[in-house]
Amino acid sequence: LVAALADAFGRSTLVRFAARLSELARIACGDAPPAPLAGSMTIGGGRGLGWVETARGLLLHAIDLDGEGISRYRIVAPTEWNFHPQGALAAATVGARQTGAADLARRTEWLAQSLDPCVAYRLEFADA
Image 1 (cartoon, rainbow, N blue to C red):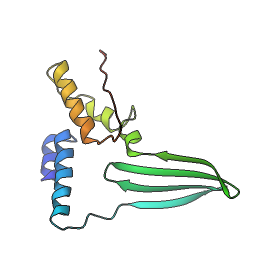
Image 2: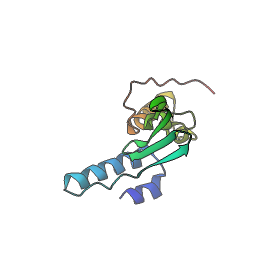
Image 3: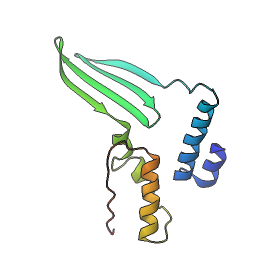
C-alpha cells in the first residue's frame, strides 16, 4: 500500500501518514517492529558518536571527553533534522501544489504534524 501511494503521490503527507498507520497496524497485530539501525564510533582524541534511527528520524549523540570528565555533549534530535531550513519540511514544501494561502497553511500544518515535531512550533508564511 505504502509503495503504491508513494508511486502515485511521491513523498507526500498522505504517504507519510499511511506508512505510520501501516507500521502501527503491524505492531497491533503482534508483528515485532524492525530493529532500529544503531551504531557508535570513536573519532579519536576522546571523541565519539552514537546514533539510532527512531520512528521520527535519526537521533545522534556526540561526546568529547576531557580525561574522565565530559567536556562537551551534543544531541541532534530528529526534529532538528526535519525542521532544518534544508530538512524534510522545507524540501516537501518546495513546489507544493496549493490553491491559495489558506490551502498552503493547512497543507504545511499537516506536513509538520506528520513529522511529529515533539516541541511547540509556529508556522510563519512570507511572500517570496
